[in-house]
Image 1 (tube, rainbow, N blue to C red):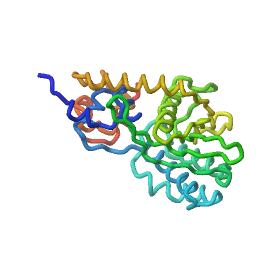
Image 2 (cartoon, rainbow, N blue to C red):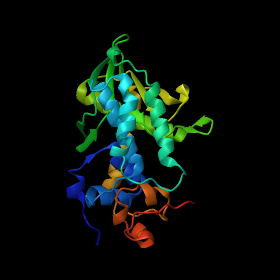
Image 3 (cartoon, rainbow, N blue to C red):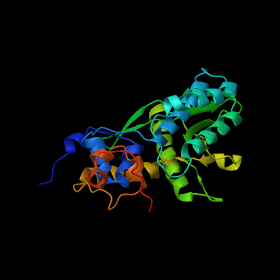
Image 4 (cartoon, rainbow, N blue to C red):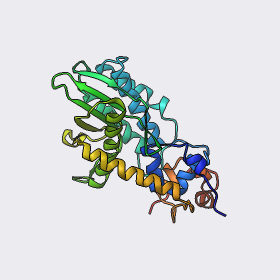
Amino acid sequence: MTQDFSFILDSLKFSNSSVNSFETCSLMFKLSYIDAKEKIENFYSQFGNHVHRTLEMYFDNKLEIFQLANYYAENFGVNITVAPPPFPKDLVSKYFEDGLTFFNDFSWDRDGLEILFREDFINSKIDNIELVVKPDLVVREKETNQVILIDYKTAKIMKGKYIDKKKLEEYKKQMFLYSYIIGKEKGISIDKIKLLFIREKDPLAQIQEVCYTQEDGENTIKEFLETVSKIKAESEWKSKQKIDYFCSEICSVRLSCPLYVSKFGLDISNQFVQE
């Protein structure tokens, strides 16, 4: 007999990350948002949080720009406590150096920006579906009066010599969703989107500027709501067919996944799977 989870799903606030989790693995969505299983952290998420926290300290006027690199370096081991995967080799040192280079070279003058909001939860309701977004930073550029949505990314966007277009499109959809909800709930029109790729050293790759139109937002919200409808109609909640890198190292509810536990048990050390 199929269980009815409508009482949970109807009260859930859907986000970009929750919808993405369903598209990645429907069982991961169920374990995370319906069963509310305990989650475990990973190196990548802790690194991302540390970078976000360092930038927050600057835009909150708690650090000066010349203090960023020292703060990042001194708190790296404090905020990142989960052991990294054994592959790629020297992962910690590479990530640390990428971040340190970024903060040593960081030159954004906050005096030229009016901070409109930062890391605020923005709730919305469309077609009786509750949504929530959490933009990293929204500013008004004093010189141009343009409103800019800024998002920090710790994944790389370059794939060899070229931009990973598939990944960039995914990020653009996320930003279009944020921009649409900001406009709807805050009455603020986003003029420009800046994706800041922390670990890219080439200035041309590090900042990706994206234009936004109302049509972009409408198309994105339509697709988002269609996926929510699929979630509400789901009954099988299948896991991935086989264990991959995401399953073995990144999934936060993997200790509750039968596929994972059948292969590794409940030990979370040395589980890396290389295809």
